Length: 128
Image 1 (cartoon, rainbow, N blue to C red):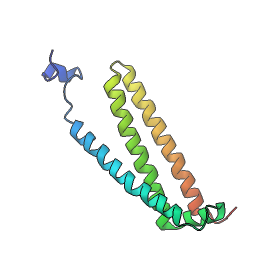
Image 2: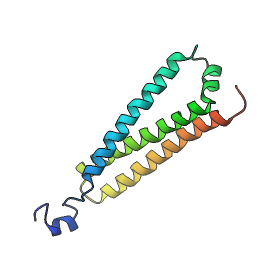
Image 3: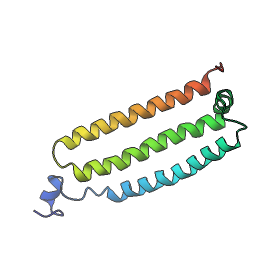
Image 4: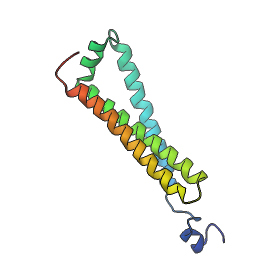
C-alpha cells in the first residue's frame, strides 16, 4: 500500500497534514530562543558581578523573572518538538507511544522544576 492512500493513512503511513505546522513551530520557537538567550546573555554581562546576592536581586525584578520563565517554557517546548520528530521518524512500533509519553513526562517535569526554581527566587523575600 502506498503512503498516500487512505489505507496508508489509517495505518499511520500517510500524511497527517500536520508536518508543515510542526516544522513552522520549530522555527518560531528557535527564533524566540535566540532572542531570549541574547537578552539573557546581555543582561548577565551588564551585571556588576555574578555574586549570588546580585544575581538573586536581579532575578527578583519582574522584568527579569518573566523573561526567564519564558526562556524555560520556550526552550523545553522547542526541545519537545525536536525530540518528537526524532521519535516519530525512527520509532515505528508500539514503543513509539511509550517514548512520546516519557518525553512528555520528562519535558513537563523538568520545565516545571525550572519554573519553580525561578519563581521561588523571584518571589522570596530573603537573600541568603
